[in-house]
Length: 72
Image (cartoon, rainbow, N blue to C red; front, side, top):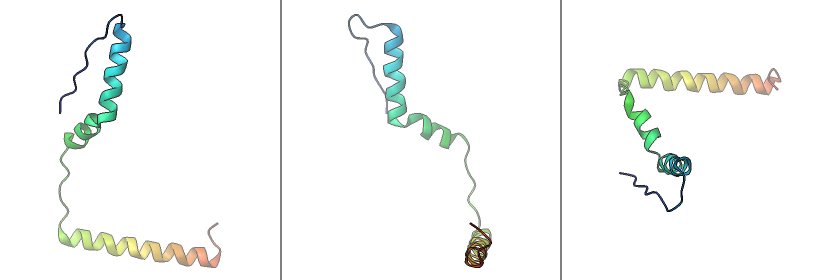
């Protein structure tokens, strides 16, 4: 996925750099590179399950507090 920008006639270097950086941002290349910079390890099945249980309990507790009027 290469981006090619050619300088137009009577175009300043600054405007060329601006067009290039705008193209790069729109293409999403930088975001993809930042994601790939560090490989995230996969969680094992037990850890995913415990995390889901924890989130469900927290959600239930939040809804209970909201019902009691302790949260605005």
